[in-house]
Length: 90
Image (tube, rainbow, N blue to C red; front, side, top):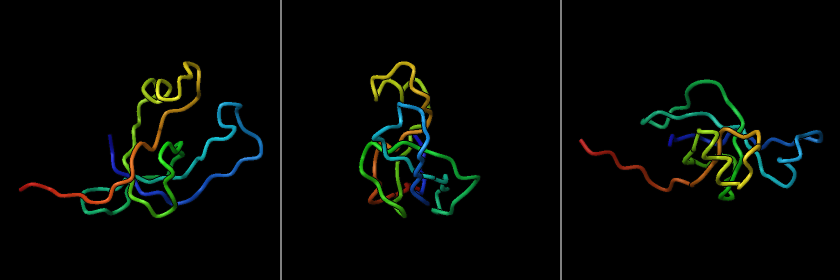
């Protein structure tokens, strides 16, 4: 699991049938200081996240496919939680 920030919604008129009816977003990983890092990538939303939300991201294809009960789904990254608060221990 990783933290990420939702930066934009993805709308596609032509897409794989799996993505019909699925919300997809561009997300960027964030570090522990909540600074965005790396290049943006697409993630499928399972929790009704929105642009600007800090989210918990699962980036493992077989687990994502299992969540959707679609063994052949072309999905790797899935938003599985909206983060309200992060507290770090010393």
